[in-house]
Length: 365
Image 1 (tube, helix red, strand yellow):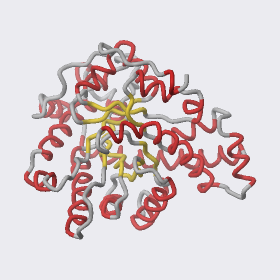
Image 2: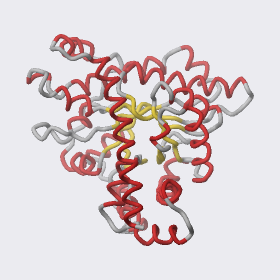
Image 3: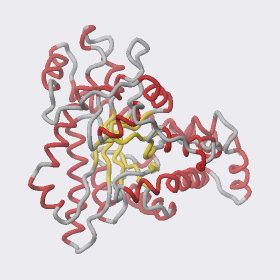
Image 4: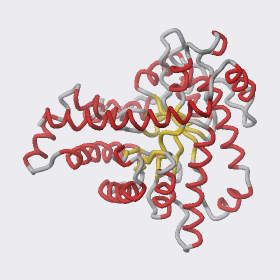
């Protein structure tokens, strides 16, 4: 389907209702296939999709399991490209096309929405200086104002996030699991903005903070009683939303807003259901909230569009999150320790996917 034959979303469709609640729907996927056949353009029109994210795992699957990239890889190998350089050219070509599709949304929302995301090499997760340099170079190479550079919110990544924001590079902070990690990422963003104001620079540099949800529930599935199963990720997300709303209401942000600063929106990531016994739209329905983003895998997006329900939305005060987290702690889960473990394992998993991705490109070449 071409962009000229977009299907208008129904006013009663689940995705339209979620969009009207104030939550942006982003796709947690990109392939050259959905660009070439018009699928992404169709979803922008029919499913209220207003952005997308990518990561090494997504691209590893896209390149290793499809032939969309064969000709492009051959052409780039013929020009002497290989490894990371070849991959980033492929990814940037895709994301430039996607960014152009989302540009009308970006303009209509004053730069708040309509973003795509490209991740720096996960091999740099613990190298602050190299992350900063890579973020600057990739954003310049892409040449799109509505392209985020993804930087992990690890302790080593936080200075890179601040420096990238100060340098005017929009950042999607990834690999956040705990509320404390989210708040540290938010502080890094605000410090970068405050430095720009002090230097007489424009404070209009956007960012989102990506909190991973479903990964909390897999390692705790066997530890928790039935009534607490698949509740930890939602409780963390609910508590983080309360912290986010509190930050937006703070004197610190009010001062910055007076200069035109946009909020670093909270993004709920990893929202595909992994437990086959749970609802396939569990994390979407449970984390519906205004002024946030939910980035959904394709399967979850289709499921929610088919039979999703949009509740009233999360409580700005955190609802019963604290009680749930207390019960989960009493049941034997070390939540802070697990959060650190999940962030470390997430970084390691992206490194593995990165190596697999480069191997797939080499095999294709």
